[in-house]
Image (cartoon, rainbow, N blue to C red):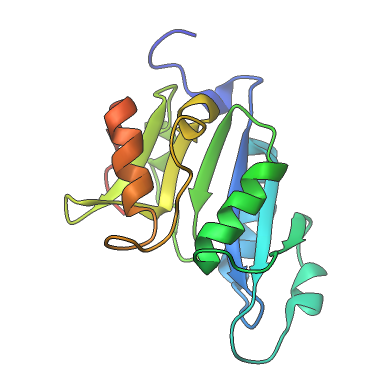
Length: 172
């Protein structure tokens, strides 16, 4: 693939991975997925257990994605959910994102064939709200997405960065 070619202009697709508390709804994210659905091969959403009223049955009926129920938490709720989704994902590239990451004009023009692209918070954390990573890079990490030693995705981001440069997205 030629450098600078945007992935979403190609036949290749990406899988989206999101963890979702059972007691929450994100209507703007649901709209975003409906509007942009043709950009993605699969959208894998893992419901996680949190205190509060479980509205996951209703949420499932609101948007056509692959809803998964998190297995019992092993190390960390997000780590468990993300790994479970990765085990179901089949694409060559994954977009880890969060429901409160809002796409602004010019975003998709920044997404190209770089092996890793992300939004960095405070020049330290490759943020879980927006991180595209090629599958072969993901599989060369520990696949740890928990909070040790700093916050969710910190250790994963550092491991990705040790394997390949991460293209930094503008904005965020």
